[in-house]
Image (cartoon, rainbow, N blue to C red; front, top):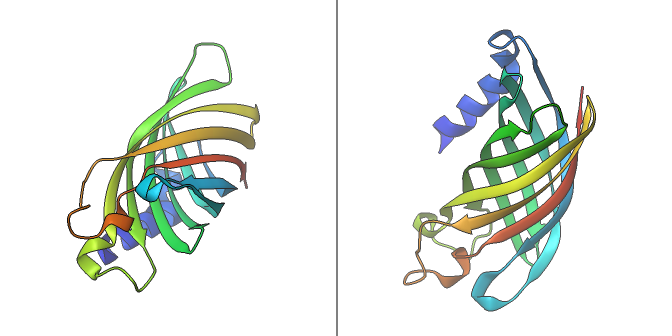
Length: 160
């Protein structure tokens, strides 16, 4: 897990020189989780890095802290963003690592893997909004039911 953190940190610090059009910034918004058929709501906030590969395609990894109900979560999404031609609308898809920070889960039950699908809109060059739904890919309900949940978030991002 520490290798993932170091990789993301290096990407944020040194990744700008890898791509011609890249920027990083802050994102925050509403978070909803669905463990055991119940809904827990809260917020998320974090940092992202967006690297444009072509005019219509970019990669956006992020590291986010989320709190929904009593759960403290760390999210590591890596979204592939596909822009509709000649618009500021985009379709997003990508994997997301989820780590439960609370002590009530054993260390092996804290890590999950999701598939995120979402839509976004670039309001300005440095401001965007998006909505994403994360589908849990790894089922560990036999061991720890609270670690198996889907997520929904709606947020805004600001680049610097």
